[in-house]
Amino acid sequence: MSENRKYNYPVRLSILRFLLDAEGVRRNPIPFHKRYFDQFGDSFSLKIGSSKHIILSRDNEVAQYILQKNQKNYHKSKFQSVYLSKYLGKGLLTVDGDFWLKQRRLIQPAFHKQKMNQLVENMNATITSELGSLVEEKPIDLFPVMSQLAFNVVAKSLFQLSISDEKLNRIKYIIEEVQNFLIKEIRLPHKSWWFSLSGQVKKHLELAEENNQIIQEIIEDRMTSKEEINDLLNMLLETRYEDTGEGMSVRQLVDEIKVLFIAGHETTANALTFTLHLLGRNPEVQQKVFDEIVEIQTQTNDIVEQLQKMTYTNAVLNESMRLYPPAWITDRQNVTDDTLAGFHIKKETLIGVSFYELHRNPKYWENPEEFNPERFLGEQKKQSMQYFYPFGAGPRMCIGSGFAIYEMCLTISQIVKKYEIKSTAETIQFNPLITLKPVGVEVLFSKRWQ
Image 1 (cartoon, rainbow, N blue to C red):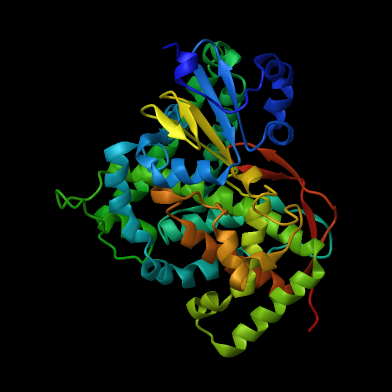
Image 2: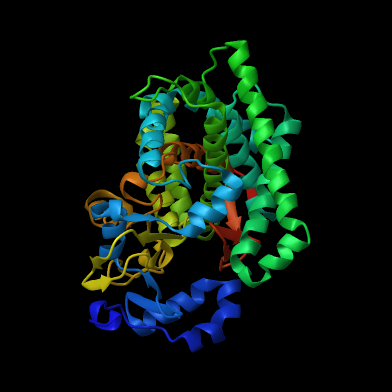
């Protein structure tokens, strides 16, 4: 039987049209994806060469199947395992199979709710100190401010006392430099020869190695000092593999900490920027958040208890991440031939699921373009959660989701309590890189006079 008869794929986007659109797609794929979905339906495919297939989908059935129901047959793509691991090493984000499972089981307990509750006081203090220098009464570009805040929250939660500002700034600089270069490598594959020849690859690999050295020194200092400090590094140092009873090697710890830095700060900064913009555009929602926070603070001074009561604030955050999911797309490749949503697909088909489009798919959401936090309250919440992937899904769901939600709720509650937020623009600009990055989002903070 010929290959064409054996396999069948969703409606195909012609390679010619794809090549004509390629330059625009490279700059910002989202408008093109939307156009293709509107034309072809919830999944479409592309064939490259004689045998390489790609599927892009906004279908919940596809997302559920590759991330949960049959996740064992769907590994991370070469992009994630090869490109990212070159700079990030072999941490939870980039590895697959048995090694991933072993690492996940090892690290999971450090992110248990009880452990996260222990970090909350420290997290809250860091947020207060970061917000102390917020510029008032004039429009500011919000993303750099939220990026600095989120980075420092991760850094201080990881290494509570043992990091100088100088080292911290260096880590932040290296992460940003390496990530910007990684985007160039992915978006301009035809220039890879030039990146190698001009020494850019070498330069960025050296930066990544410098980052490893800084983190390794921090870990080794802690191990020799034998200090018991209530931070994530301590929790990670205490973890033990089930089979050997041993802890992680320093090399493995370095890789996992890099993942926590990168995954933990940028996605949170993105989500906070989008959420504060939406609050600045919707004063009635902002007022409800304010009322909730004031009410909660009359009931208890315990920060963990306050967080557990922030139902409306949480709904606002969820609705913001529905419209602007920081991790806006994911991809997988099937290890063996499979049947996916009625299509018989060849092994190593690249499948992309656009959470951005799934979260706006009219099949699952009423008035999908509208900002409406009520979707995540009461009975409606059960319905919404079935089609909602702010942290992915299944066994590989983001390990730090609880940490991120705590951090975002605390930041929003501190800002709204103290300031009224106004957005300067109606629409949001963003750049879909590895994460969905806000561009030039300006807001104005004015002191509240209760």
